[in-house]
Length: 453
Ligand SMILES: Cc1ncc(COP(=O)(O)O)c(C=O)c1O
Image (cartoon, rainbow, N blue to C red; front, side, top):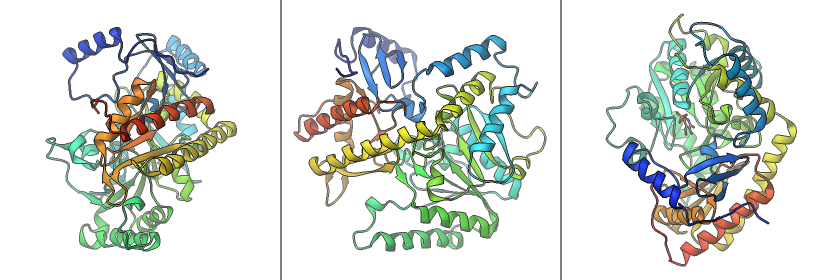
């Protein structure tokens, strides 16, 4: 017997009532990938207020590597809450902040002396990483990439790509930001081989430091080793190595944004480890906290120590409760058997999604790294015309049949798989079978109505 249990349509009567309350009380620009109204969740399963059980292939947008409410994390949070909720690290020192920093210094790439600053969200830590880089180098410019997503605060939205969904009408944006094309092997010019395209991409990067920006004015290059919102594009290792070489040549700080791709998602603790590249700063969030709000900047001690006393920090950064959760998470994800399970999940995804390439004309590309996989939907495999409406229709049907799924990609035409990494193979296959059926249904032209995001 499978894990999915459907007792009502989705949403059911209680869910619809809550959605109506949300519509009248909550700012409408807050998107939602599904109309599921959650009551509770465990592992890779979500139970809604109408008694339906779903398989979760979104995992809070990659926030739940260790699954929903793992007992060890809940226990650690509870024990910590009984001691102290939060004294603020700006007021007093407490062991969980120090312990988590020590652990992050230990597990992030690089054998040099490291330090850590804790914050609350991915965006907040990206901002801090840029502040550190500017302070350390005394330079203003930050180089980022097309397709990047780094958050929604003013600086991080300025670093973020994709106007329609994220940036429309929200300018003016922060200055001193330069955006460079990111290689996308699926959308390379047909006339070029992959090698030629990568040669060209590397040349474009070099050219940018002549045509667009002075390297001696550049504080940082920030890159997601696997672009998340941009469409699960693993950055080619050669391109990452070239970024590292440019940073070394010009004294630029290399920042790896591992907010979505970090914490075992790709089968290694950090995605950049696949390329053998060591960044100067690593930004983490999402799965670090198992659902509690926490993020971190970790990296070279001399860069983290470059801010003046009082130049960094915030009231809530590194709350003991979130630290307690994160310490448990690190203990769980670094176990060899956890990483081996993730790699196996990745193989299952590759096998099943690879099959879709063969059977579904709508599926133009299947890509990713480890258990971070995406299927890109196109109307025509020759022209690669994106199929965002069809993608929405697939998601709508998938949710109605008991699986949480979400889009990604510069053209909003990909379905990304970010399940809790504790999902069993049987649950993963059951969830993917529902997606498979939904793709076939939409291909037959019987489209369901669109959802919000
Ligand atoms: C790569 C990356 N960086 C930064 C962020 C921003 O994180 P947050 O939403 O916690 O501010 C995200 C969020 O999706 C992300 O995927």
